[in-house]
Image 1 (cartoon, rainbow, N blue to C red):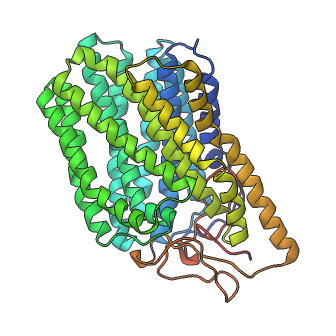
Image 2: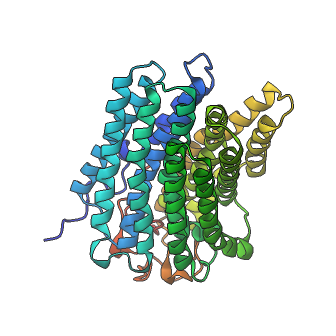
Image 3: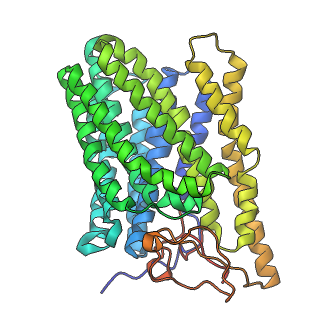
Length: 469
């Protein structure tokens, strides 16, 4: 008999699912304020990319898998997810502690724990999509599985880097490490997820043929990652350079799917603007790496790659993560328009300022001119302001839900389809007939509920967005 959906944790937060990314982000803020830490820049980058963002990848890719395959989580799957979160958390902490302190054994153990968590996660994703589940969006499973295969290999390169090789080998290993982890593990997951999430965030229709383009792009992206890593390992600049061009070609094939919804609706909220800024910085990083592969020696590449890592943190990872969470948290809290409006109002506070200042500060830091320290502090503080706004927005959503319950209002509920036939307009819609009605074509229907969207606050049991019950 099929396992029964979890009833115990519906609508309730789970610490290991919902708060680990917040823990990592808080630790990263503390590290950013304390430059006396050993290898401060390395610690900061890995707290965000290996800690906060990798945890988010595991949690959200599992959540979206449940939505796309119409399979609700069970108590057993929740316990397994928590176990994977513990492995990733402990492994990441050992790596972040062991590498700056020159404890190679801790790095090895931590990398093994991280790889175990991700391989286990990949097996779970493959099981969920087995037997044709997911239909036309099975391409997303291929992206998630390919991404998961990258991380153990990237972790191996990280372990070799921790052994303190010479300058030439450091540059080669670091180039492969960045290509596999940033372009493979994180990049492939982002591309696969934005296939259906981007039109939803923009509140537009999915581009015609988006699934086909995304499927074709996967081969370019995989060949690109493999070529960069192989070229770097062998010390062959032309192969690594060809890999960056191939990866860029894949991004070009896929990026058309982003432009269609954007041309229809534009960007009026913080969420799509922040995600879009992160994607743009990913493109800049790719071009930057290509230039180094073409012109630089391996002994000098490593010096520049530290800059690339910081840009990946500041420009790509944090903006992408904050943009996605600002949409998904509001969607998860509840489908009533008043709830979403309350949370969106908080997340859109000073949106133009919060997008412009961090990006201008990052551009100024990269420019070959003196960079004022106060501007750096302002940029980091503005970017980090999302963390307290995350809590304020969650409280605003809870308050709005309490008001609805107090008045006994059921009207004005809405649904959000992540992928309904790939063509229906997404976003909150008023349902004049009253309570939430399941759409059998939508991944957010009650036939495929997930145990609330993972985030930072209690989440509802009925899909991405649900009406008040």
